[in-house]
Length: 201
Image 1 (cartoon, rainbow, N blue to C red):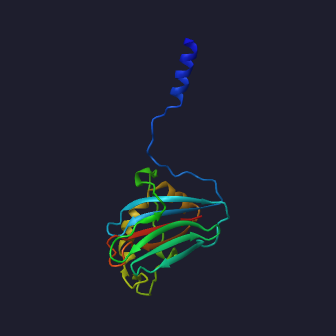
Image 2: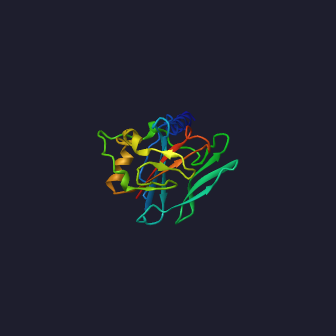
Image 3: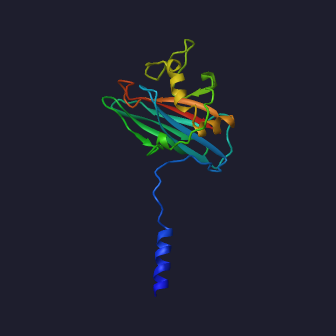
């Protein structure tokens, strides 16, 4: 009886592990992957990310379809991975208020992204695909409502938040396609807006 009790206690303890709240980005072994990183528009701070794996071969360009409903009162922007119709991002846009991100339900926290021991050089903005943004020759970006978005003025600071992330190194080493779009959240101000950087391989 004592032997059985000891065995039961040992078995119970073996199944009890200290909870680990850190989030790591691991290779999903899928045919293609998409990394979505969220950056605060006002502060340029990295606020987290989400990694998607797809059982389809990578495309030459990022296979994203954008659906935009203009916020007369309430609207939204939705990004769908076209090959399998998986929604990778959806966020409300509110006219007199601030919308919330619906998908992904939760971004992995910045602290959960392992760091490399060196920083990787920033790619040229000319290598990015621009979703939901227009880029005139002046280099100033405009969103669909005509608000001026001066990405180039802030990009060095944005990249400084990402340059030592291992996951960025992995995607860049695999010659990932890159994209960027602005999620406005509010129709009247960009104070609550987020940059979304997309890396696809």
